[in-house]
Every structure is written in C-alpha cells, then in structure tokens.
Length: 355
Image 1: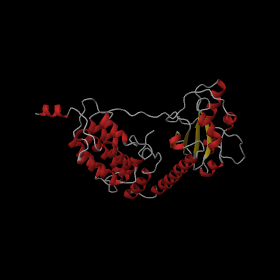
Image 2: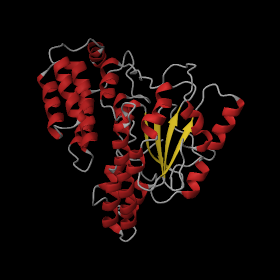
Image 3: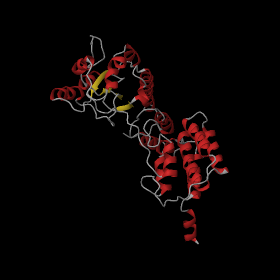
Image 4: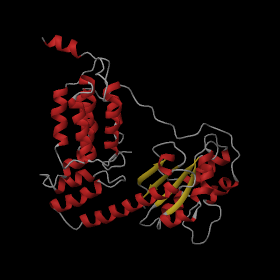
C-alpha cells in the first residue's frame, strides 16, 4: 500500500537512512506474530465465527461478514479486527478483552464492526467459515495478528493498525485511541474533499494539500489533482506532495535500492548541495527536511567522524522541530557517535585515481 500522506512512507523510520549510509546493511524487522501453537481456542472465538460477535443485539453495528458490513456501511465505513484463532493466543484473547468492550462502539461512530479470523492450519469447516466472513474484503498488506483495518464505505482501506505497537496491551486502550484518531482524520478528509469541490485553482490546491498531511491513506490521485489545480505551484503544495525522500537517497547513493556496497563512496559535496535544496524549501514537510539532514549526517560521519560539521548538522536537524521523533534520534546519534573517528573506507584510493 502506498501513499503520499504521512502514514505510509518508505522512510518513516529515519534511522534507516543512517544504517544504509554508515553500515550498508538492512535492518531487521521485529516479527509481531507469535510462533505457531496449538492452543485451546476460547469459546468466544468459536462463537465469533460466523456470528461476528458473542452476544449480537438488534441495534448492534457488529456484522457477521464483510459483505454484510459493506452493504450496511455509512459515512464512517467499516472497521475490522483481525485475529489468528489457531496460532496467535494474544489476538484471540483480545476478542474478549478489547474488541467486545462497549468502548469500541463508543469511539467508532457509525462504522460497521467486524472480526475476521486468519487461520494457519484450518480445517475444511474453519476454512469455509473464514471464507464466508471475509468474502469481498481486500487482502491485508501484512500478515500480522492482532491488527485493525479501517475501510471507507466503498471498501477502500484508509488506515491500518498492525501489531502491538499500534494496539498496545490486551485491554486495547492504545488501540481505541489510535482508532479514534484515524477515524477523525478520515472524517476531516471527507469534509476537505467536499470543500475542495466548491473552488478551483490555487484555493483548491491549498485545501487538497491539507489532506496530504493527514495520517491516513489519501486518494492516490491527490498530487495529480493538486498539480492540475495549481500548475505553477504558487501554493507550494505540488512539491510538498510529490517530494519523495527515497528518490533523493537512490540518486545520491548511485544505487537502485539505497544500500551502500563495499566500495560505495557517495560524493559529500553533491550530497550537501542536493540535500540543502530540500532543507531550505519550507514548502516541504519538516520531517522530510529532517530526513535530508540524516543523509548529510550519515555521510559526514563516514568521512569525518565526530567533526564540527557533524555536530552542526545534528543541531540544525533538531532545531527544525525539537519535539519530533527525528530530533530525538538525532540527539541520540550525537551521544552514540559523538566521540568516534570516521570509519575506514576507500576515499583515499578514490582520490589517488583522480590524480
């Protein structure tokens, strides 16, 4: 799933830039799933499929299948809880401790609610039940349980909350908070789209630009709409919604994937020139400008170690937004790398070849 919004960004973890630049290695991803087990499936999980909830009521917004939810969906769309009955005990317990809590209905507005099982080794009966429940539902972009998926009334996913980083402990307190934030952003996007339809030109581009900053998946053609409304980019929204940090990384690394090879040695002067163009452009998001700083910090660290320029770059990155996560990472780098010499690389050999 790709997006020009904040929630789906190839480099949402700025530390990746540094691992690429300094180590040339790929960071490991912590698995959210528990190893396959053969747990005793609680009765609540058995009751949930195919009814969709343990104790359905006449006025409930909890549906038995995705098809039912899609048919009944209103402006607030559909919210789905994904669990693994035969392999993930935590997600199965959360059916009771989180998903069936009354608070879920309180924070989800008029959204339709559904729980979908994902088996690893289903029986034929379980396979058929799961198929009935999830029929017509888009395939999730990951295989993490527990997770929450959020769809609009047409079945287009606009947000996902995979794993405990987004759902918190088994009570789901953090999950409720995050669901409420995503739903609020979704409602705001609907209002802004309606407002944008009433105007044209730069005024429209400016409104659409607000949508691009929402922490959800936005319309795929949003940047195209902005460019058509403001072809001269008088609002700065075109560059704001089309700038892609990974493309700058690939260009300066001279590779297709951004990873440094054993003999890679990007040119620091070119990196400073190109990165500063991004950093000085206030129309570009602050987080993207800070990521441009990380390019310079990583390469300077490789060539100069804990030099005065290295420390200046970190301080400048922090100054852009002292409260951001990027600023926190930059400060930690100063603590971790602030007294080390530059790693050895092939710069001297490269310089000899030039002469």
